[in-house]
Image (cartoon, rainbow, N blue to C red; front, side):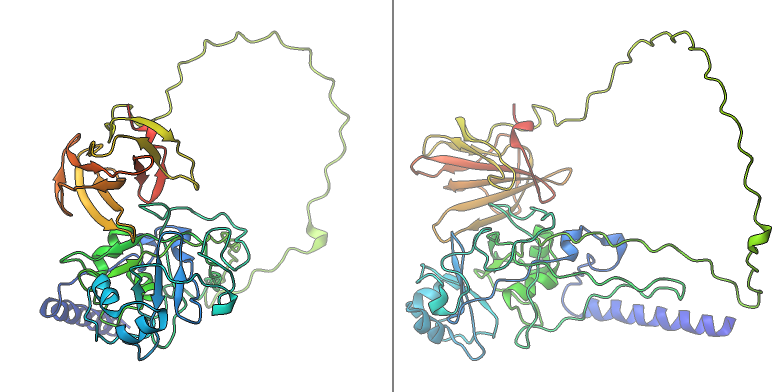
Length: 425
C-alpha cells in the first residue's frame, strides 16, 4: 500500500513539473485560477452566469448605447457588412481588421453606426434594444447581484456554447469522498437585460488580463465574444464584458449520517421498552415574589459604524450634483460642470482601463487600494494612459461638452457600486 502511494505521488509530481516546463517554453504562463475550487470562489453570481442574448436573424444584438453583430460560419467583413447595409471599410476600421478578413462563427463585431432595430420581423422576440424590462424572457425572480458595470452596469458571464465557439472543459466540482452527498446542479440564469460594458482591447492586453480587470472568468469572456481556442485578441477589438446573472438559492445542506467503519458491527437500536419512563408531573411552583429592580447600568459609548472618511477622496470636478446615486438605476452621481473644466483623479491609484463607446464618450477606470475603483465618464482630452500612476487631485482630462455638460462619477468596491458621496468631502 505504501509503495502504491509513493508511485502515485511521483506521477503527480512529474505531471506538475512537465506542465510547468511546458508553460515556461510557450506563451507567458497566465492562468486564471478563479474556477479552481473554493479557495478562489468569488460569488454566487459568478457561478450562475447570464447567457449572451440571442441575436436576430441578421445576427444583430442591440443595446441602448451600441449594437453588435454575431458572425455566421463562413462570414467575412464584406458579407457581414452587406447583410447589415454597412460600408465594409468602415466596419473593418472600427474593429481593427482588414476588409477582406474572415470571421469565426460566433465572433462578435461592433457596429460603427446603428442599423434597424431588431423586431419580430427580423426574428427577434422583442422590438428595440435590450433593457432590463425588455429582455424577451421571463423576469428573474431571485435577487440579481448588480455588480457589473464600470460605466453603467455589468459583469459576470456566459453564453450557451455552440459548435462554432471554442470548446472548454466543463466546470465540475472536485471529487468527493464516498461519504459525501451528490452535488446539486446549479441552474443557469436568464439574461438580465443589463447593457454590458464594452471594452476596446489596448496594446499588450490579453483575454486573461481583461478578464482579471473586470473580475470575470476568461472562459465566459471567450464564450460571449466567440474567441478562438487560443483566446487571441487584437488591438482595437471590442469585447463585451459578461454581466452577472441571478444568484441561485443556496442548496440545503444534507444532514450527515453516521458511517460504521469497516469490520465494526452495526449498533443495535434501543428497543421501545427500554426507553426512559416519562417524568412524573409536578405541581407548578408558586410564583416568586417580584425582586427589587436592578440598578440601571450606565450606558456605554457605542463605537461608530465604520464609514469611509469624508476626506478619503477629492471631488473629481468642480460643480454641483445634478443627479444622485440610486443603486441599480444610477450607479454613480452626475456632477454638473462647465465643458472643458478639469476632471481630476479622486484618489491616488493606477489607470486600469480607458474605453470609448460608439458615441465617442470615453470611460476611464482608476484602481485604488482596498479593491476600490473609480469610474469617470464624459471625459475628453485625456492626459493619462492605461497603466499610468496618478495622484489625488491630478488632472486626467476635461469635461465633455453636452446639454447639460456633466461628469458621471462612480465608486466601486470590487465590482459593487457604492454611494460616492460617502467618500467625497
